[in-house]
Image (cartoon, rainbow, N blue to C red):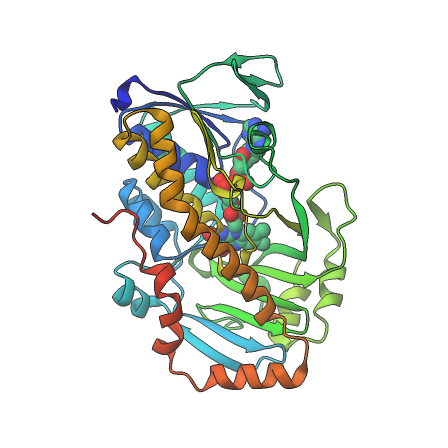
Length: 390
Ligand SMILES: Cc1cc2nc3c(=O)[nH]c(=O)nc-3n(C[C@H](O)[C@H](O)[C@H](O)COP(=O)(O)OP(=O)(O)OC[C@H]3O[C@@H](n4cnc5c(N)ncnc54)[C@H](O)[C@@H]3O)c2cc1C
């Protein structure tokens, strides 16, 4: 299909939407991104991008711009809640050697800004303060009354996607029984050397905490997850008193307590998801990223899957005879992999939070005797997958 004839509306300027806008613009399409927020902003939080996601950044021409902003951790270190090392998965040079590309960690705002600059440089138009309200046979209607009828519509509007609700009659999102506190602590507020350059995972009964350095080690990012029966709040991301977080992890090892003692501001997220959608495309409309396959963050792959979707979508559309068949080819190409990652992330929640002390001890012992390379092997299907190859 001649992509130059295509005028594509991207709903949502998250990681998935911006990446897809760039990939489609690379193919020659005219792309406009409609974002409900008045500007790109992010609560302070980190984002891990594994080598399969770096492959897409590279194909979008952003590797050079992203590299100076990225932190490349040496390892993922799994620990029990008392701080004893359970296992060490080598990353750093080992990951680059094994997968051909690095494992990176970003401040989300840095990665979003890189994608925004990349999109603008390729002629993508960004419209802020544009909240999609309705989709019907005539096209799209925004909250401010504006109407458009583009040749193709991509819903990259996240886990609470309006487009999914309007067009795909998806089931409403459900609380997953997990909440996550997120935040950043300036390293200057912590004792020197408290955390090495690694993603540290401290695993306890019904909860775990992940911490890793960002921006050249000047700050430590944390995600602290706790199982809960219900999410009562109206919002799904609320400022919380850091004292609640400290209390939840009071029994954890001293590095965790020292980190949390230094927290001044934190947000609590209710983690929501919905079952795998039976259909991701309808005529000239398709979904990508969290809008069609939201997942728990326990494999750190939600944004990475959005990057993979973005690249594959542009290839399939360009190769399709028409928009509808191009979008169907995209769905076919992505569904199995995304469903597998969704399920894998849910399984990880279970293994991080083992409740039975005997069972937990045995599982940790089994992990501790495996050499690093053997621990990385189970992730090959995920990290070695290169949607940009061939
Ligand atoms: C605690 C936590 C840690 C995580 N860690 C990682 C990690 O390390 N690595 C990783 O790969 N993933 C991680 N994820 C997952 C990742 O954050 C998401 O999968 C990813 O951000 C989804 O990107 P997206 O572009 O699909 O949607 P979003 O980032 O949600 O973007 C959707 C955009 O659409 C806009 N929008 C919504 N509705 C409308 C509308 N009606 N009209 C116009 N605009 C609209 C929104 O404002 C938003 O800008 C984590 C998630 C959590 C909760």
